[in-house]
Length: 434
Image (cartoon, rainbow, N blue to C red):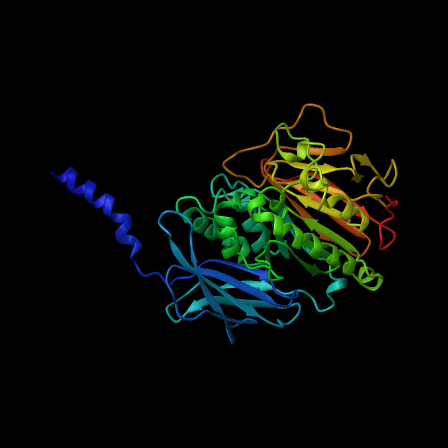
């Protein structure tokens, strides 16, 4: 009889706890607003708190900003619901450390801090950390990222798609846990994201609901400026999920060309000479699998089959993009400057000085339950360096002419595996006409 009673209790427990009122903020994370001195604070609560508040200030919680919440209902069988809260902190004082917490009269988050950018942002030398494909399980790089972020090593994060593996799993509880996990990074610096293939379920709703990116496209594509860098986030999934993506693809491509034209206006490019794109699925890779980047005519590179519409390689080359960041492959790979499978090094001795085509880096090895990615045995002529170690990429924009990147191995206790300097004498890279 006791075993029967115990079994009934265990079966009923999830339903009993699902009715518990929960007002505590969880999954606190930051992102840029319309500029780097506007910061959006996003978090979730299980129940409706009737208000969304951030108390903040330099040293003390002397200021208050109010925002709004939206109800998010997961597409799983249980239709689990939660409230996503967003508050904009406008016109923060440059080069200052703010403390903040978020919540409502019903409950507050822990106290966090953020260091704001200097006033003359184009003269700033910001530090970034870049990675994709980090899961709820086997997130091997996460502890090191948490420690380095809270020690002030980074000014912003670029997470290049694939979160939690997957955020919709177990009626979105895996997504909830993942947002709690990354809070140790994302609550201290802007956490800028793009969607990957693992976000596809229920029309990418878990991704679109949870993250707050600029531009009004629910984080699918957008651009922002940090120091001397113009970043462009692109939605590669529109090329692969046609039931969701064809209209998105048309809109994105039109927007993208206009954004690149604006970024290349001489007075703009002189002020902000680096153009860096990031999207989940790469154009090129040398991994030993059947992913699209192993094909000669990858969709992101050349566009839709037969028509060759909306291909990104020619567009990025024409508008002189300096650096293209990708993920999806659970590995790290640095390419020589290249266009259409041809290498365009600056010179034999200094390939990345006055390079003559964009540089590609694939950085999808932060750690997830799918493990590492193998490479084909013979490295192609266009691939400069590759590694299957778990890790992530650091980037520092020193000034208008020098950009530094290095790959960190978590397997080797934070050792640097690879590094390059992108150096250019002119604002516009000297790419040949095609």
